[in-house]
Length: 228
Image 1 (cartoon, rainbow, N blue to C red):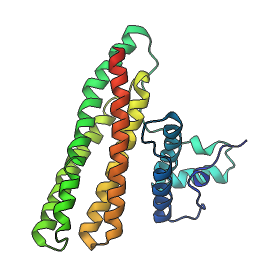
Image 2: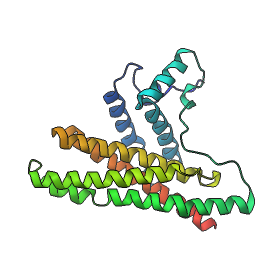
Image 3: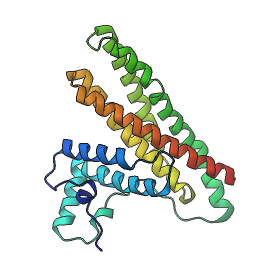
Image 4: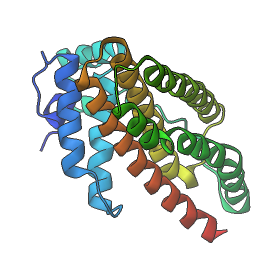
């Protein structure tokens, strides 16, 4: 049985627009995102995330389409691995490297994501009083600007060091959390520019996905820490 293409994974045509790609991803993410971190749900989300990450970025999508045009038999796995990997290590050295990564990369990045999503509900509730009020929208924009700075710093920190093999699952969940957070901030910013409530609703959905991904990353990291 051949491996599905990214388009087949999302249930869309190769001619799909960016908005159609986003809509398909959001619909499937709602269906398959696990509430309990179940393995089957996680594996499905990994596949969906891989497809979305490639097809939502124009340059990567063009490269992927060229591979499809040349008849690559396994294109769905090509050019999707953007989480840096460290060389394979063993024993105490690998354990030490994993613990350092959890301390120096995972913890501050995880905390940064929390700093963005924690005040989101309060900011949204305040804005709901009157979305057209200049002061309220200014406060919301200020929150988004602060969040964008935090997000960019966290993204740079995450990319600053390859993740050890022993922390691959945590790194993968953290990576997708950051990507979805970036998309959420973009959608919320678009709302403040044109008051299109579709952007606001999409931003809310993406923040929910980020919250769930971060929770799964936290649980996976705690299991690693218990291993010592």
